[in-house]
Length: 330
Image (cartoon, rainbow, N blue to C red; front, top):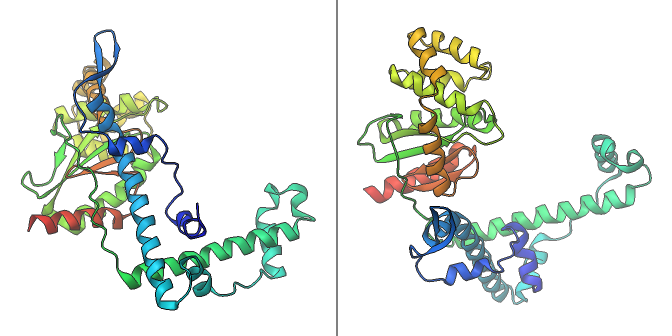
């Protein structure tokens, strides 16, 4: 890695491309089998579909890195200096950390420092200076990107999400469909609900939300909570139950799920019988299987018109994808 690349890559994530690069050059995936377990067959197409988001991330990072290399080359020619000197020149001198800053750092982190930070002042000074330089260089690169306004044409992969869409709210003809694979025991899924609500308020009838179950293996209460939501759906109350299960104060023990049914106004006897029978376990398992085929590994995972967005992302992330989708539909 040359000096120019060493300045760029910390800001776009240094990733070892290695063998994964071969996937980028591979021919279109076929339905040829790559593994078997009994009657179950894994195809190359399924593997590549699961890897699609990772491959896109690799491509995206490499595109941004190469764009920055080009910008620094152009800027270097304008300044009549080598490209790898541009950032250093524009950054200028970064001041050394003050004694007060070092003391503040030690005070804040002493529980995690050897000897409570005593005698480490020089190392801490060096660390703080290094972090300050990285921050300053990052700002320079951000300004250069803003100045030259590169156009990134790389498109995110679009997935075809198969399976039931009966747990939906919003206009069936809405231009944007957001499919969420979620887990009622997942704190990140709970946190994401406020953002989803904000998205719905911002875009109104342009948004259709679809819920799919994806209970994570280490969330032992999540599968039954999903079944409870399906039992509520039998009585036309999936979304009230969904909203209640995601409230911070709601417990997911069996007894509490039955109390939740009463809260949302369900026929208690019918709900209890449904939940105790486990009749919707197969549906939850089927949703889980569909998610795995799409490469879902964590929750929440969203598919916005097939474009994957992973995690409790801020509103701006949703807005970016949705606005681009709406623009293309005009």
